[in-house]
Image (cartoon, rainbow, N blue to C red; front, side):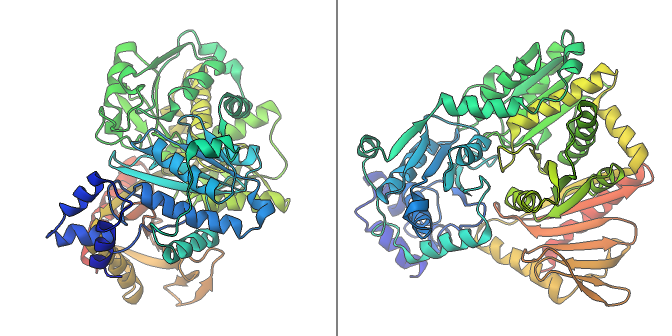
Length: 577
């Protein structure tokens, strides 16, 4: 159907409430808005669904949630009734309508004969991953839009290993969605009836206790924490989200005595009223936390995003303020710390390994290799990181001690297969205390790493392109880089071009084309003659092209100059379409 026909189909549906009919009727004559809402369904990818809430096929609402869940249920049923009987774990975060969407999804699964373990209230995303593994579910489903603005919601989907869906399962769900009518092909049932029939059971404190026991087992060095506990102070904010209980708890168990929480942001509120964006990756989001930190003279500020899968920290800058540690910087600090901590504790496994996304700092590989640890790259997304972890460990090729992405996502242990802010908060704090016990800060630790491995700097440029026109522009930009290959960037010569879509690496000096281990993702990488690497890819969850600048320099000014120069070039990509 055309978008006008789809709009009419929704407008005439008896399923909609009077208020929803009124919202659609008010769009009459606004062709751009009608097209944006109805030209296609929300794209279902390996990250699931994500979109603005509202009425329409390309919006997050109860109808699109049921639609996606029916498709997901059919993919599960295709595995056989015995596998489907293992059931599905369902969780949700603090966002507006998240609890409603989670219950609707549970009722669709139940109506399809698939048992559901539904969290009694909001829970962190990593706990959903844990629940899938702990209760031997065939799959999991989490209603969240992570760190997106308040008008968004989303739908993350997990498979039996506790990781987000592999591409072939995501493609199968997308195909099912195309074949199903959003209203007439959906099975659902009354929630109370599903509970009474045992098709929906509730997960609560027992799951929390099991999860937190695994988190606390990751502690390496309580002694260093105890040495500084009387004077060490830290501030925490959950940004109105799901970390508000578990992170303070694990920090207390670690031995932190002086934890100050940002009270205004300890209130669960999907409108996120105290921040422009609930994204801890943005330093400006920490304004209230910084105010509190200055008041109490805190050594560390820590913030988790609304679904508590990502976490960021700030430390004193030596000038009366606080500076943010980037995801890449935290990644190399944690890797270096865990190597030392595990060796000191005698817990380093045989054949240790680390895994990161290919857009994350190459400094990780240098640290790993200098310490005799294998290092692996994957595509962006913890589903790929977890896939590599599973592959290495099942083949006996290595034991992954740490995984991370530059976008402040970290994973350790074997009990989750996703980013985990609860465990990362514990380890970031333990590490900070370890440095503090030596009279040092995380910034001192970074400088020591730079002295050993060279100054590394990373910067990400986001080229935002919203709407239908933006999608076309993003495609045009990526296509043109392939049809008219770039050979020079901001005065530097491109020495090699890597196209992860077809899995080829081209040496520009010789023209030789070689296969790579990774292929099948719309990503381009340029290696430059000054040691810089530039990576370009469309975001999988937001309407933007992301350009990652991975630079090295003889000192900080040299590295910064390169990042600034290539950032300016990245902005010109919008004209290459």
